[in-house]
Image (cartoon, rainbow, N blue to C red; front, side, top):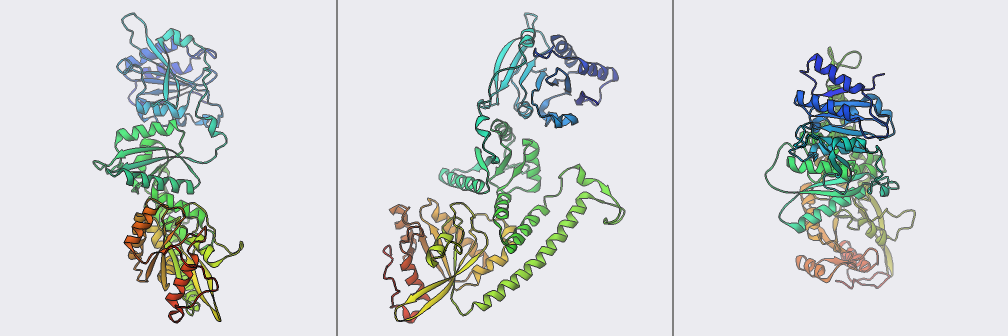
Length: 561
């Protein structure tokens, strides 16, 4: 089995040059020392002759497994060029670089080279320049992984090449950033954002994005910001900033990059190529959260439909395997590419789900017709505004019938309807239906809005909309505006009533501001119960006018009106 590989810019090399490079691959390096000085001198001579930088990857036995010709900027994952090492569990690699521009850069790794080195995670990185200095010595430097440094590397030694090679192979330096990762199995995410001049708006949008990441079960570990300036249609972010982000991904051991902007398929591919890391935009993150939350058959159907519509335009350019032609049973014509076959299957699945969605709409319409004799109220609002908690508190639901209420974004996905009974003194109780709907969010993906049309009809077909506002959130006014915009885009003509929630956690300034916006605001606290009785009295006056002056069994009033 072949153990050593020659890769990189090998096209155009003469046969004699290839033979000399192949002979360097066969030379063994000492097991306990860092490298063989004679081999490195020959490596430097070849680099000067070829006018190309040369890089070696050496394993723990002193065998050179890879010789890369040219700059590491386009090397990607070095180990991907050695097929059989993918089965190796040890990471005791040595990286040796003979750089022709080493003197000019003082042997400091370039940003993209530092990214490649961090992906390899070697025991050390030995860099030297083949040209002798004034004292007839070859300058060399030894670098070790240090994720606290900006480039991810810190200088351990800088002296003559012979002294560096004679040092001990193992370097007893612990990685300070890996101890806390042993017990944390959550995906580590780096957030990539564009900022405007409004710093307050930037921080609130970032806090919301972090909340979405945590709601998806991942951990945001770092943030990369760039000021909104000249638009780059290929990547949105500048090349220099993306080089910094690629380094930050390796330094923080992030496994995913999430952007705060929706990406086109081309932009996503370009970002993944430059960062050599999976990239997800905000819309795809929301779709992933919905996929995790969907518990009913109707919810899973709508989420799958939204995901397939989102991915349909993102099949192109997913790799060379999708461009190969095939033939035989199940393909059309003399042969179709894997991309065409996947797209055909995707369109077929979308059409099937679309038919099931129409049946779901008919089913929900029949259910609504059976409920026409009772007044219907829908709780709408921004995600995590407390809609589920208010439904549980209003209806006094037991443990087995209450709606899931958690302090995270999109905790509730499927709409839930419960019966609210309003006992009367000396007469039969009044009844109405309250529906808890999915929360809204700014820039909700269009594919999600289209797929969830059957669910959103529950909002449009009610008699009254209660717009729940989380007054404890500093951005409540913007959230309220977002909810109104979404309702307007859906064509909701139902009467809307603002209900200010979490009044026990907000400041007096928020109460004054929302009162100035609407004098008829209702104030409640779903957790403490404050104002709930006043809300019930208000609902009774809206649907039973002749009972507007009557009282419920409990005489508690809305003390915050």
